[in-house]
Structure formats: structure tokens, C-alpha cells
Image (cartoon, rainbow, N blue to C red):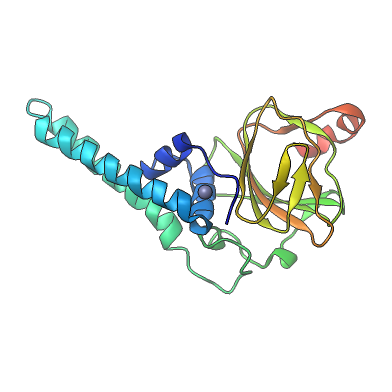
Length: 220
Ligand SMILES: [Zn+2]
């Protein structure tokens, strides 16, 4: 069971189908493993449905607008569901959460990882219609530490395999972590296995300290 969760605002946006692909898929991955957030999302969906119903019955002059809004919202809810529900098991790694499987062609081990060091590698994810976010997998080798860095914008991380710790806590499979401008940390993978995370950023990482000047150009 996850210890770190998306906040209520994100879950509400997810329930309303308002999250862009990358972030919506990440939330879908989390709620698949988290009964608590799954229930929250169901509650928001129900509330949203009741709200729409009220708008529908109260609308008279604006009925055309309401009808349009209603159908758009229903279509969005359908989209967000299909991204989590229609993901089929295509024989890829069981550690890859279901909502991601149709975007990931191979097992973790067989992906074309790249990076400036064998300790930290990445794999770029492409969700097609998504310009707002950059989405990647990160793999930190067991027992290795990422150089200390801050974040220019928001970075959402979901742990998929293994575990890592930073100055603020210890994160395991299913944990959903938000880092932002105020976060300055050096995540370290636990010793027993490589840690693989799904990360969605609305701005790239910015390394600080000694490693910053050296490595920043590689993180674009
Ligand atoms: Zn949760």
C-alpha cells in the first residue's frame, strides 16, 4: 500500500478527465495500486455527476450550452477511463503498471535506456498528444545516488520497482511524489535492487552544486 498520494486537487482533476495524458496516466497507475485514492476518485466522479445533473435540470435558456458541456465532460471521463481500463496485458513486465503497458513496448530490462552514467539511466516516453509535459522512466542503480538537484517546475514521480530515499523520506512501489522549486534533494536507490521510477515534468531538472555545471547539459 502506497504511503505517498496525489493531492485532492489532482484526484479531482483526474475524476473530471481534465489531466493531460502523461499526468493522467500516472495518476491512473497510482490508483490502480491504491484503494484509498481509488475510492476518492469514485467519490469525486459521483459528485461531478450530481453537479452536472443539477446544471442540466436548472438550465433553461442555456440548455444548449449545458448539453454541450455535459457531453464533452462525459466524453472526457470516458477517455480517462479507457486509458486505464483498455490497457491490455501484452506480455510486458508485470512491474509496469497496467495503464502504461500499451505505451511501453518491452520489459524494463530490454528498453533502450540511455544516460550519462550507468548509475542513472533514462527512457523517454511519448504519449503522442502531449506538449505540456516531459515523461520519462528513470533507473537508479541499486545503492547509487542521484546528484543533488532542484526542480524548475513540478516533477511528479511514481515508484514502479525498487525503492529510493531522500532527505524527506523513503519511497516504495506505488508511491506518488511531487517535487517542485522548493525541493532540493539527492535521491538514493536502496541497496537491494535498481529503482525504476516514472517521472512527469513540466520543466526539466536543474542540478545544483558541483555536479550541476557538469551534468546539466545532459539532462535536457
Ligand atoms: Zn493513493
